[in-house]
Length: 160
Image (tube, rainbow, N blue to C red; front, side, top):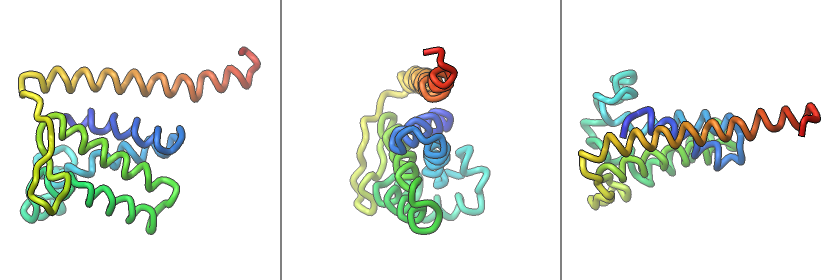
């Protein structure tokens, strides 16, 4: 899945699990691209190459950083060290990434177990599906913005 689709799905996931908190959307979006830190060729991996290369050499791609273990560890680190209220958005963002990759391939969801899990949509459908997902996620984000900001401000002005 493309990084932008991962980002958008993380934004939506973070927003939803925090009850509509825009900070949750931001945290979920950022968390959703962290899983690709294990791939030096990814957009995120290139930015953090000194971390990405050793991670890839130790674990490979679609393993540790694409597992329930990683999602839980990221949530725990965020909960105890950074922000308890937004830890769920971190987990949701990482899980959104994992689910996206499971649609287009297989991941080691139960790492360190060797079992791979995923649907693996044929490559010919990948581009179509990724584009469609991106459009749907953008529409959902626009609806969220409309409901949360436009409608609330119109209510406050007494229009509704």
